[in-house]
Every structure is written in C-alpha cells, then in structure tokens.
Amino acid sequence: MKPDLARAAVAVEQTTGAQGRTAPDADGSSHPARWWHAIEDGRIQCDLCPRDCRLHEGQRGLCFVRQRRGDAMVLTTYGRSSGFCIDPIEKKPLNHFYPGSNVLSFGTAGCNLACKFCQNWDISKSREMDRLMDQAGPEAIARAARERGSASVAFTYNDPVIFAEYAMDTADACHAVGVKTVAVTAGYIHDAPRREFFDRMDAANVDLKGFTDDFYFKLTGARLAPVLDTLQYVAHETDCWLELTTLLIPGHNDSESELRAMTRWVADHLGLDVPLHFTAFHPDYRMEEVAPTPASTLSLARRVAMENGLRHVYTGNVHDREGGTTVCTGCGAPLIVRDWHAILDYALTEDGACRHCATPVAGRFGRYQPSFGRRRIPVRIALD
Image (tube, rainbow, N blue to C red):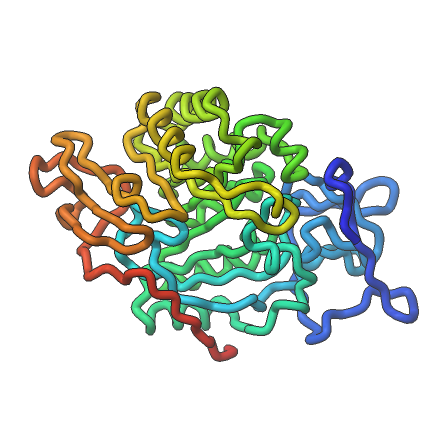
C-alpha cells in the first residue's frame, strides 16, 4: 500500500494470520514498544511522533515497524539491521564532532516521513523483512565498535526515531564501554520521547528539509513546526552536539528568499555556531524528473547563510574544498581542509582551538589521528 501523502497521518497496513491474529515476523522477533495509549474507540494510539497513528489489531503505523499486537504495541525491528558499515564521521555529515574519526553505522527499515526525494528509499521505504538480514543486540554492537576502534556508533540510513527503543538501549551499551553515539534524523518526534532519545545521544545531524510548511506537507507528508521544536530543544536543553543538513532540491526549497528566512531563523533561534550543511540533490525515488543541484545553488546558499552570521557553513555531495573547510572565526586561517569526506589538513589543538591564534572552535574535539578518509567498510557482527 502506498498511502496518499495528504492522508499519511492515518495510513496503516494490516497483516493478519489465518485465524485473524497478527502474523509474527518470520524470525518471531518483536520488542515491547513505548509511547502509546489506548483510546475510547478500542484502538491504540502511537505517541512517538506527530503522526499519532491509531491502530486496530494487527495494524502498523506509517513507519511500518511499530505494530499493534493484542492490546499493546511492539517494535518489529529491534535487534535487526539492514547492515553495518564503518564510515568516516564526516559522512553523517558531522564536521565538528571528532573530525577524522570513524563511526560504526547502521539502520533498520521503515521511516515516519514519506519524502518523495528520499535518497535511501531502498531502506526507508522497504518492508522490513525485505532488508533486515543482520541481527545484533545492543551489547554486541557496542563491543564491535570498541574492538574496531570506532569512536562512535551512528543510528542512520533510516530514521532512528522509529526504532528509538533499540537505539536508546544501544546507546546505553555504547556509553558503558566508552563509545559515543550519533543520531542522523529528521527530528519528527513528540516531546516526551524526544527528551529520552536525545538524552542518550552525544551528537545529532538533523535534516531541516525545507523552511515552509507547504514543502513539508507536500513532499514529506509531515509538518515543519515539530522539527523546529526538536532543533530548539536539542540546541538549548541538551548536551548533544547539533549540526543541520538541508538537501537543496531545484525549484522546491532553494529560492534565495527561503534560504534567507531559514538561515536567519537558525541564527536567531539556534545560534551562530551551529554548523549547517547544504547538500546536492540527485534525481531519485519519486523525483527522478528533477535536475541535480547546480554548484551555483550550493554557493548561493552558503553565501546567504554566512551573510546572516552563521560561522560554519558547508557544502556536501560535491567536491568543493572551500565549502568543506572549517575556518577560524578569530584569525580566518583554514583549520580543517576537506575534500568531500577526506581531511587534507588539520590545524586544531587537542582541545579544539586554532593553532595560530588560540580561538576555540565550537564542537567536540580530541586527539587527532590520521583521517579515516573516504573508506566504507562493511562489517558483520556476531549474535549475542
């Protein structure tokens, strides 16, 4: 079933067995889900995200992975992944969170947005059993990250909000062995789970997909306001390091007026030091007719953001050394020179200050090791 975006908030899918009971997953896996309540008409309502999906027996929310079974909700993807890889942290993208380090990355399946331009649609739009071939519990993931020298574990590829229980348990296991955690998310989440989720994250890259509610509704099936609430919460009420990404789609969210409004809001509500990444769109999923983002649009967006006072503005999905370089806000010296995900030069002290003038750089830094580079290494993790 492909729900109409205009009705996405109530779209569900029902899967039942021969006797009318919910059919179990092929491997029998499920995990008690949190953030739901019973409503008067006999359905249960998911309280994880603003979709507020209301479910009869056997039905799944729009995300596809949160399902009613009996009088409760379960997460059907707990402990199962679409695959594990070791990536450069810059790929998330995070430019101010232990630059040059590597991160053990994984996702599950499903998504609570319905983006027509999804660049990971084969994972986020899949029925979970089509993709979830690897199994690993939280402790196994934490051990694998530590044994492979990964500074952090990233919940990515699809949105970790929808597998929050799995991500949070994994974050606890990671912290127990000294590994940090990263969420790559659209930030579409209610207040109560938002607080618990981001309390366990050391860094987050949040997709700010556009800056009009019309864009969000028509192209993602969501709303803008909850995302802005998430951004302000993470920036001002947590210790989680925050960076933003906006994929610029020609003719949809790349007008100069929208870019000015968005970057002015970021400056006024999040602060001047929050890094902002403008990334290039390539035709995919249900927007194959849209042309790729021209380099001139990325340059315009970066210039507009800097004119509004943002200090760390980057371009992505392109080779652009200037747009990838971190510059000292004190003396103007290049501090971290990048080409795509590769670091070519590094001039920060261990505590994150300019080696030339000692001006501190916003972010999370440590002892710099030779850059992990552009490598992407698939990893298999043994079951607990």
